[in-house]
Amino acid sequence: MKLRLYLQNEIGLMPETVMALDELFAYKELPKNHMLCSSGGRSKDVFFIEEGLVRSFYHKDGKDITDFFYKENTFFLSVENIFLNREDHYNGELLEKSKIRMINYNLLEPFLDNVQKLNYFMRHTMAYHIKLLNDRLYDIQFQSAEYRYQKLMENSPDLILRASLGNIASYLGITQQTLSVIRAGQKRK
Image 1 (tube, rainbow, N blue to C red):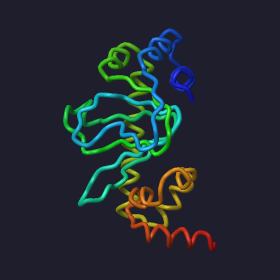
Image 2: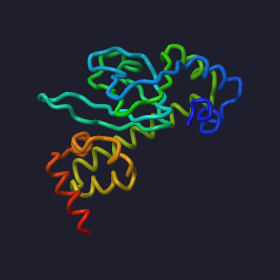
Image 3: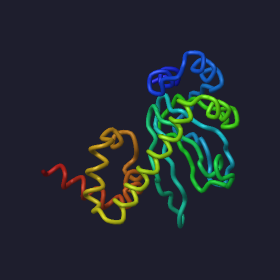
């Protein structure tokens, strides 16, 4: 979905606000493997994914660990950089050729201060992501690998076609070999 339609239909912004924001967000077509942000960086950019898939990940003991996947019609940003003014440990990588809209947070902030619906949307989105992270933490601590895989397939079945098995395995907190065993068991059922 185009940013303009998202702002209008999903958030319910007035047409003049939609037009103003649409003009401020830059449009980029970027290749697969492009890094939107890198660990140690201080990016204040807010990204909206019109088409494509972003993988948020970090490095630990020589391995990269997938933290989250961001699909079409979602915003991606560095909470550490923007809200805490600290270096971020995460990277943002495009897993597909993508169409991205981007804006510096400093240009977006006046709209958040003055447009109630946009401010509400931002707070609601942050709360939703906190809930997703809480669920993810609970699942990793208390649920089986099979359960986590099944939940991912129920919520995002397209990921298996869009992300590598290594990325999916690290997101689930398992090895790629364990993921292969789980998938083989699912096919037999």
